[in-house]
Amino acid sequence: MCPEVEHITIERMGENDLEEVARLERLCFSDPWSKKSFEEELKHRFSIPLVVKCNTRVIGYVCLWHLYDQMEIANFAISPEHRGKGIGKMMMERVLLEAKKRGCSSVMLSVRESNLSALSLYAKSGFIEVERRKNYYRHPTEDAIIMMRNL
Ligand SMILES: CC(C)(COP(=O)(O)OP(=O)(O)OC[C@H]1O[C@@H](n2cnc3c(N)ncnc32)[C@H](O)[C@@H]1OP(=O)(O)O)[C@@H](O)C(=O)NCCC(=O)NCCS
Image 1 (spheres, rainbow, N blue to C red):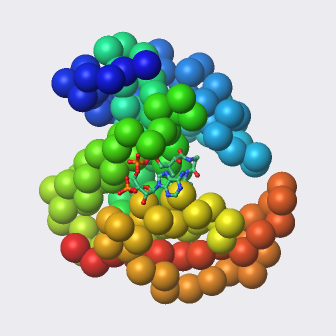
Image 2 (image 1 turned 90 degrees about the vertical axis):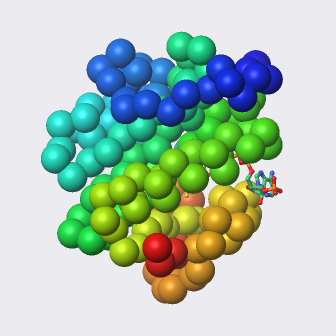
């Protein structure tokens, strides 16, 4: 547990974080990214992978893709035991800051239509639905809702 907000930091994901990030990814998603996928995120020029840590322990992560003047949230998760404490909101504030800092005009993401907690977080963060992609996700098959926030 990490009750003290001052113990929480958000920093660039490094090699040493990969094992824990991949473990959390398997806990959080039914169709998880592999450890190799996260390793690739560390190398791409357009990719901005961040981890949220409580002291030195990874408790969340986000992978951003900066493409032209747009930021895409490719992956976003908080460890199950640390949810409901405002950490997702804090991570989203950092995402919006990164996007503004890099001169982006908008932030995009896609989310499963059944993912009500994420949909609620995104709506509260100013994202609106712009498109729906039929059967976009696998395991289970499900529509994607594409959301966007102008900066
Ligand atoms: C979605 C997720 C990132 C939210 O993180 P979190 O740290 O629990 O979120 P916060 O505590 O900052 O809450 C922010 C808002 O999210 C929404 N939210 C969070 N948990 C919720 C829940 N169980 N039910 C409904 N809404 C919820 C609320 O709108 C909340 O605002 P509020 O506190 O004013 O009610 C987290 O549940 C998660 O990692 N889920 C699994 C991975 C995932 O689905 N990622 C998104 C993929 S698109």
